Length: 79
Image (cartoon, rainbow, N blue to C red; front, side, top):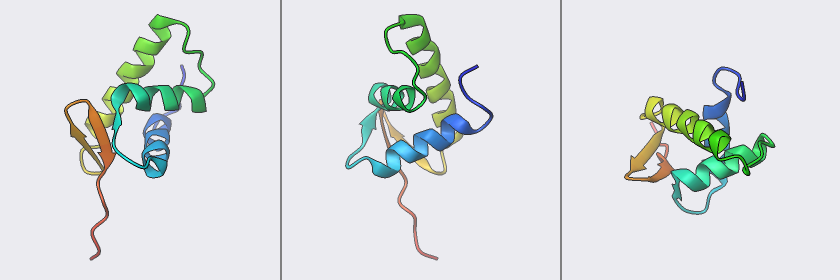
C-alpha cells in the first residue's frame, strides 16, 4: 500500500498547484512517485501507481480538469 486514503489526491493537488503549466498524467505520476520515494525503476510499480493516480483524477472532476492526457487545476472562481 503506497497511499493512505485521500493521500494520492492531496499529492496530485500539491504537484498541480506548483506546476507552471498543465502536465501529462505520466509526468504527474512521476512527480507523485518522487514525493513518496517510490522507485521508478520497476515497471510494475510505475503502472500500479499510474492506475492509482488515474483513479484519483477521475474522482476529482470538480477540482482537476483533464484534457486528453493533460491535467490542470481548475481555477477558483470568486464567489
